[in-house]
Image (cartoon, rainbow, N blue to C red; front, side):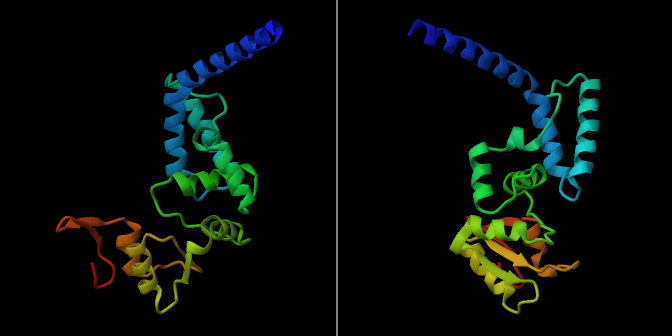
Length: 191
């Protein structure tokens, strides 16, 4: 029993040491996470890696403590949640998991360019039957959007083109305002 507890003491000491390093690097890692969530979106995995190397080098140059090898999913991701994403159809490669973090942690609405339909499949599996689907060219798209907003349901707009319907602008910009004590948003000709 004492030998077993001695082994645990060694493991606990290692864990405390690791946590001390993580706490010391927290400021820089959160700063890099915010930058990644803001700027990663349109770039390939290889380019993201080069950008992060530059960011880390600049942080070190400015004496901002951060991890030597930053990875967004390691800082902002939850391993259990990421495993669920894999079970829901999101590939387990680093770029896909980082994209999952961008979708779930970002404040902006995600635009997913998805030629292999992997993100589409993941979103459909993630939200299940409560997810409503529409296409940008659907004549009832704004009605579907209005219903989803009022009911608090997720909506996936598929097959978006280069130009979006101008009626979506207040939604995309989250132009919420308060009127008579209620939060509202302007959609089409309605509030």
